[in-house]
Every structure is written in C-alpha cells, then in structure tokens.
Image 1 (cartoon, rainbow over the protein chains, first blue to last red):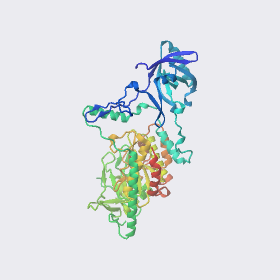
Image 2: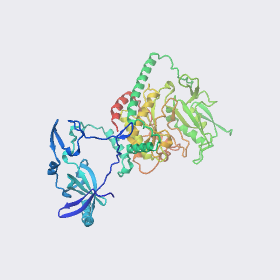
Image 3: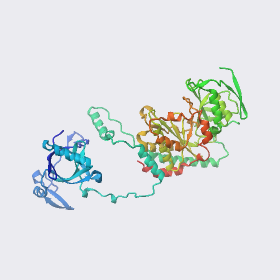
Image 4: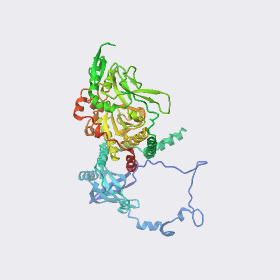
Length: 280
Length: 322
C-alpha cells in the first residue's frame, strides 16, 4: 500500500489506539492539460493584477472574502493560523450510533485506518465490538489544519474512517417540486414491483458496472496514441428514439384516418389491391 | 406413393385421404391420420382464426425429420370449394400469388391431408388486406432463457399495454416462445401497427434491460434474453395460427393461455424452459383443454382496440419512464 497520509490516534474513553490513515478510494478521472491547438504548447497561467495589469509575485498575494459585491475582508496567513484547530492528530470518538440511522448522503470520503504495532489489540477490540453491536463511532477529526466530523466503521478486517458532511452542508429537498402520496393505481404498482423483482440482484456486485465513458475515452486516447482510427460514435440512446417514434406513429394514424375518410367517400369501388375470393 | 385412399365425409364434403398410417412424428409414433384427426377435432375453435386470412402452408410430407417446404402459392389440384385469394404485390407490380384461405373444417382436413402441418396466417383478412386486425408482439426466448423470464417479460408487455388501455391476449407459439397480440379496430395500416410494436419493444427493453434483446442478429443477443421481434409486423408477414401443430417431438400446438397461467409460470423457480412446458399443449391434450376452456381468443376476450387514445396515454406515461 502507498504511504500513509496522516498518522495520529483514535481516542476512545481512556484508550488510545495509534493509527495511520490511508487512501481508500481513488478517482478514475482522466486529467488533461490545456494546450495551444496550433503547436501543442502548454498553456501557462500568470497571476495578473486587475488594477495595474502587472504580474504579481506569490509573496504579495493575500486572501479576500467577498462579503458584498466588490467589498472584501482581507485575511492573512496569520489570521488563518489564529482560528485553525489545534493539530491534535486525533480521532476523538464522541458517540456510537447504528449505521442505518445515518442518512448515507452525509458520507463523503472513506480512508483506511491501520494500527501501529502497539495498537493492534485495541484496534481489533474496537472493530469487533462495533461489528457485533452493529454500530459506528462518530468522531471529531483534525487532518492537517481542518476539522471534520467522521464515522469509524468496521469493514472486513479494517476500520474505515469516513469523513462526513456537516449538517449545514446538506441541501434540503423541500425546495423541489416532488410528488407526494398521490393516487397510484394498483396495476401500475404491481408492474413496477414486478419489474423490481425481476431486476433484483442477490448481492450488489459493483464489478458488474463499469465506467463506460472512462473506458471509451481511454480507448480513444490509446488508439490515437498508437495512430489508429478512432472508435465510431455511439448511436442516439433509445429514449430519444421512442419519443421520435411516437411522432411517427401519430403521423401514420393521421394518414390512415385520411385514407379511411376518402375510402368511405368512394365506397362503391373495390380497393385496387384487393384480391378476389372464390365462391365457396 | 401408396395408392390406398380412404373416403371420409367431413361436413358437406367428401374427401379422399391418403397414407393415414404414415408416421410423421417418429419418436412419438403419431401418424398422418393423427394429424388429420386433430385438425378435424380442433376445427370449431381454429377455423374462426383462419377465416379470410391468406395462409402459408408449411408441409412435412415425410415427417418432422424428413424436410419441409413453405408454400404460399396454392398447391395444384385443390378442389374448388377450398377458399383462395389472389394477392398482388404492392406498388402495382405484376407478381401475384394465389393464397389458400381456410374457411371451414373440410378445407382444414384437406390441408392436413397434404401434410400441411403448420399453418401460418396473415395478420389481416382478405376484405382489408392492408389493415392488420391485431398487432403482434413476438417473444422469442434465447436457448438459455427460462420460462420464468419469458413469462415475466410477457406479463411486462401485458401490463405496459394495459397501462395505456390496451387489453392483450397471449398464446404459446408451440415452440420456444410466446405471441402477445392486441386486437385492433378496423382502419389501421401495417405501418402504424409496426411503429407501435417498435415503440412497445423499446419501452420493454428500457424496463427489462438485459433480459430483453432487440438485435436481429442472433450472435449479438444474450442467450438468456427474450428476443422481442417487432420486425414480424407487416403486410405479407405471417404468424403461426392459434392451434396450429408444430413439427417437434410431442406434436405441440400453439395454445392460447389465460394470463393467470403466465403469472404462474412467472412464479416458477428453476430452469424449466418454455419449450418443455409448452410441449404439454399437444395434439393429445389440446382438445380436452378446449372442451373445458373454450377458445380464449374469441368472443369478449377479442376486444378490438383503437390506437389513438393509447398513443395519447403513452405520450404521457412512457416519456417519463427510465
């Protein structure tokens, strides 16, 4: 495994468990550099002052909070240091709660916790106790200069520290126009439930789902790097096709209607394409 | 060919039948006589479905292992009391075909005597050959597809259609698959029926995902999926008629089903295939079932629908799916 990004301790009552923090998720996202299309020169950024139009060196740059349009409160590094939390290097457990009592929207980013040698026993104890009580620990964590709320969860042999959002960061859904308990016909519910049943999986197997966009983009990059033809663009999704077809059907029904009307108008004539039936 | 012929009276007609002892199903021992007896017995329920429809005959003169041929053009030497219709190719082309039309029991027995084991019908009738009187949804399961999956998809089609006010009927094909149909009021073109079938196909594909395949190329389809064949709708395209016999072991027939039976299949566990289950409807069992159940595709059950109100509902409901 890669090197630890942080080392500190879990504080749990009178027990202290020295731990290291490791990345648990990495992003598949491809990163791109901006180039000048003509000559593929890298695009450089220059910090330019909007007042005098001259480049500004790093040591002359401060941070400003725009509290009103065009009005700034300037904060220096010193100012930030004053409010920074104490770098306690600790995961302070505050309480325990059942996992399903936590709205999953609160979870942000997981990290693995690894005990140091002298912490192994306490680590295992905490892990197993959490697992058997079906609870997770809610903790206050300081990583570098930032304070977080986090959950400590037992997952397999590991304790996972999952950073959480603060309550103030969660956007309420009540500003959206959502259907309430309207009348849902039983037949429709039945169909919906049946579809759920037939599409139900015994287990969630994330390996089944692959990041198509990423894979195709990567294939395209690899093909181009190797000087090959690019894969063909995909067809329009079926959704658009259906809506389109409904228009076509409406038109076709309209045409049949017209034909019917004109046929009724000349109803004595047999239709040209009709074959004759023999007498029985 | 053996010269021995048997004269029989069917209704008002006298028919001269041949080779009644010839075995057509070697593993079951069923003979051409058995085929003829079945078609004579099933005629009261079957003929209404054949009436006025151009037929394509699939003949097996040497039994189900002995090769077969399709016949659109009426065989030579047919008595003049067997119905027929001359169909010209569209767009004023000169080609024409004289199709057999089976309007009574004697005609059906006559065809059986030709070893016309499988009868394929048009989805329109001679009075209005350009207007299908039902829309067909042909559900064709892959080799590894279970009866449960097929039944579930069929029920999905039923419920999807019911959601836009279209009652549907279902039957076994007699082979692997199922036919779901929506009877139509007069006046709809094949184009409209075909587009409608395609819309339903995409909706069902959207709802069921990998359990449903729309690709025509077999190699591209999952063998566990149900192939939703919406291309089978069109002028001159045919489907196996209700109660037609199939050229398979057990001599299965294409049997209309109660939806409750399909629901029971959908609850079934295990890997039973439709082929195994549907073989239970065959020339030995069909008549007893029909005497008990009657024709599930006739009378009030054959409720003709209009597509305009269905389309109006579909525009509201189906655009929101997914």
